[in-house]
Image (cartoon, rainbow, N blue to C red; front, top):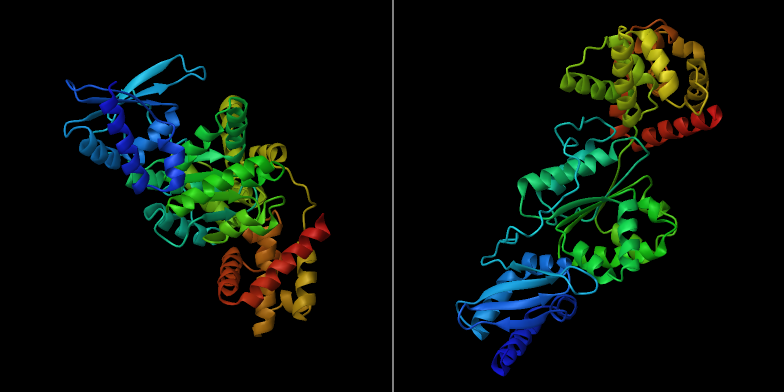
Length: 456
């Protein structure tokens, strides 16, 4: 290395410093060491202290560096890196730099980007219903326009088993399909915490942060698990803040809304609220049936309609329980060479589905609804078409479908001897009214909470 080459390197750094932010310069350019430049081969060799920094430079600054080095060294300059791949800095690997603006390193020795997404959880396999329609619609928009909408960050919350993980994976899969050069990464909060802990132990925290700050779309699941890990949250704050400032997409999922995340500092909560927060509710029995039918069709399963209906009514509004029961049903059927009938379904459900609350009866539901709407049980059972009575009657059927392990036919029989189509129509009418009438929607949700507390 000649003094002239060292001067050219220092001149390059001065030009780069003027073109990037102080933080970017400190994180990604100061750690570089100029190793050599060959007048014969025009190869500029830089020593890079970690894989993270190498990948970030190749992703975001290859065009800038090429332009600068061509002006300071030679028009034919070719960039190569010597990566330090052990902590003791004794072992290195040499890779070529990109010669274009491509976001992927040109050398085949560079590692393939792993999205960690679950391939089967896509929008094609995500069944839409009233419980998830808004969340799905916004999620699709986010996937198709990552970082370019007001939905950043996109925060999805809902109870366990409602389909949050499927949805956020679908967002990642769609974005990766549309933008294959973008770095899409799915990670559970627990894995993120394990990686961070390992980085601290190995004194690689800066590399850990730099790696995550290089992601184009970061998807983190179950972030409520960080509630007792303030250091993890502080580190995530720096990653989150950086990605948000440079316009990269963030998708988060939790079992509760941001305001109920205990232990999360205000500076992070306020940033969660900048984008879009959407609730995914437990699927109602109709959506559960649609999910089961779709899975049966996908997997080529033939299950009687009454068995599907029974499973949908008894799965506690959990997609996870639905799939578990269905898988167990098939396994038992094959192992014991028995038919997929109601008897087998009842055996599987009793073992696979945990019911922590005592079953509600239609009479119990009718009592609380009558009290709210100031009608009598005779009115509910009768044929009066007065609006107040009709709304109360439909509300009873809706709540019975959600809270009782009964078929629509059975509910109809217990509410004035009506048929199953009347029950289904009533449930649809209630859901439509809830969408249009916020006050009524609050009344129904209050009734659900009251019924849940009374059955606990």
